[in-house]
Length: 511
Image (cartoon, rainbow, N blue to C red; front, side):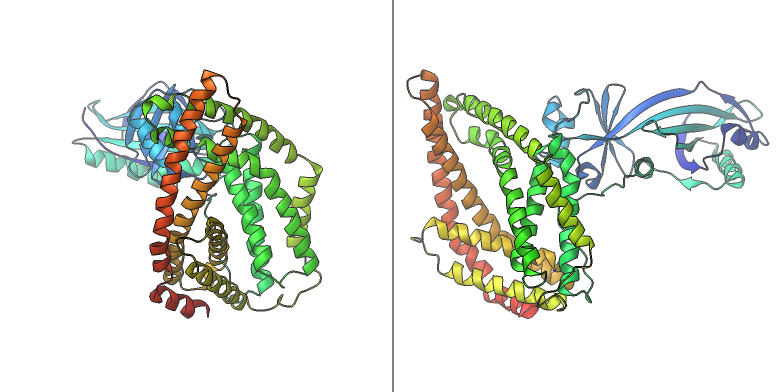
């Protein structure tokens, strides 16, 4: 029996297999097989990296199955880790599945999204000669143990019996309304049944502001979006699912602080001053854990910078960092459960949801006017500061310029929707290049400071510490030389950013 293409649909929830068979029995006979049960769980990162890349990852019968969303083709089927609270790409055995997942998920953990319990009954459809002319699969799906059962039917033809397959499909279409089904559709429908929407979280900031918005309306919309991001990441931080929950949480805090500092005279001064202090407090309590998260991510990078003979002692260094990080994570979790933290969040939410109370000088100013003023002022500051940097300028000036660039980036992203899309993308792209250079320079500086501090805390006398100090000394030398190279590239990078063409574009959009 040679099989041909198959088609799949969702049935109305009330539709039973018996009703389908009664319709088919008007033209064909059939033979029913034994129901087959299967339970599988969909996995993805919190920000849907596999789904956005066109993949589905399933865990079924102790095997991991990677499929393409569009064609339902199974790319990989292999064993791997037993699902626990968090799984990373490096928990999979070396092989093509791990390589594929790693290239997409990076440092994000794989989390269980939805578990489907499926019971499939196969039916062979027969002609008068008792030959199989088609196959029908009636599938009942139950998501996460809930009562909302989905009925799905698949018709698979047999080569040489295309007319019979079409006749079967016509019978089914005459019986009820059939909703087309695919792997992507199946996945999306399963998630919606538990209140989720694929792609419902993205770590990239994006907001659509209406051209008619006042400055206050725009500010409240921006702050509300950032607060929602913080709240979405709380649980992942408390459960320590992966390092990016805290990263996104802190970025939302930094963006909020930048907004309060830059979007001035829009909210009442007492409100602005109060919440600037409160969000500074949130930045302080989340900093130590995030710093250690970042340092932990350097392990492979650091080892690659050293000859094999110096790599082994770094295991001790990263083991020490891991212990510190565990302690800091406990402290952070406690602080996120305090009355102080919850009060800050609730007060901020209540203010944003309220009528605003008293106003400020620019409360009713059009948002686009405020946006132009903030962005162009910040841009001019960066141009002035960048043009003053020479090879002998102290490193601190580059660090300050990096912070100015970050504030400009936040402002551009806050108000991007008020300007022509292609032009604002080009502006941000130019700024990103400068930020990458300044960010690399700052990261290398911070890493060296951290390693110097670690060396100071090492007690001399033991062979273990001697070997560790030697490895870190070699690492410091390597990092210093790279930092010099990055700094040398600054002038050419800034020259492109401050080119006449880029200046003209900023003037056109914001002056």
